Length: 232
Image (cartoon, rainbow, N blue to C red):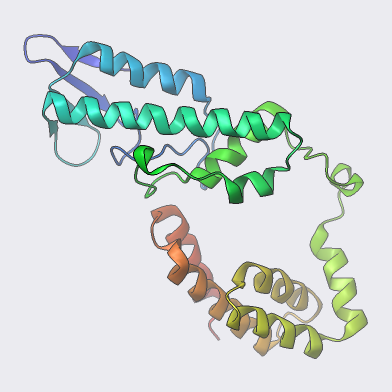
């Protein structure tokens, strides 16, 4: 909801566009929430532009002042979200899987906005799942309750936890911390008290923070929590 005060061209928007302005929206929060649809969001941003506001009073932080500044921010925000929406749909229609799209879709420099709240990659995934649902069309296993980590655990037992842990450590050292986490989690499924695997979890999450995971406060909070959890 927008409360508009025409005498001063002021819009009171609370957290309508998120707590950080102008940052990419969180179309689905890490804390758990219903998916937020792109089209109503874009309509809201355009409505604010049409009002030609001079002051925005958000739900957090100080008021934002200046008609030219506000319109420029809103224009860029609208363009950024619209771009990600269109690029995601184009990728879906081309048969590209969601994880590839999450990796490949980036904002052009002229549409760059902050990602301290929502992230482009998360927006891509939410848009994909809003249209397609939870079935990613990649594997029959998606239709059943068995988790991928269970299969990874079987492979860890087959090759041995020490060999698997060496590979995970190598992945951390070669800047592939996400893959290292996958393997370390499988090891810990087989041997919950495996100290080297726990150390890999700490190192991998530290690496993710260093690689930009500290930009989004949602992501940095989760990564730091995991570091504390696995520090033994």
